[in-house]
Amino acid sequence: MGEGLARWRLYQHGHKIASGEVEDPTFFFCCFVPTQPDADHTDPAVWREANPALGAFLHEEDFASAIASTEEHEF
View 1 (cartoon, rainbow, N blue to C red):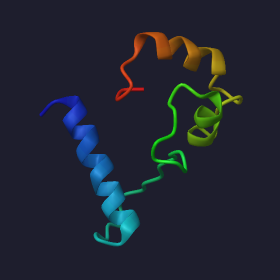
View 2 (cartoon, helix red, strand yellow):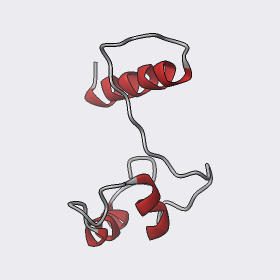
View 3 (tube, rainbow, N blue to C red):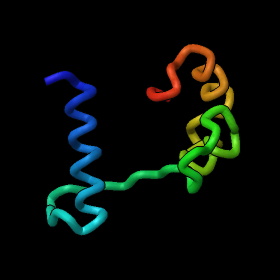
C-alpha cells in the first residue's frame, strides 16, 4: 500500500471516530480545516485558520514558498 493511501485511510478512520460512526479509544484524531469548504488555499488567513502553529514554529514564508511548488490537493 502506498504511503499516501495509508495516510488517507487513517484520515478517514479519524473522521469516522469524530462523527461517532466508529468507536476506537486507541486512536487520537485532531484535524484543523478552514470553516469555509471553498476557502482559497492561497490566502494567508486560511493558512492561519487551518494551522494553529502558524507563527509559532510554522512560518508564513514557508507556506508562501510551498504554494509555488505544490499542487493544491497536496498543499
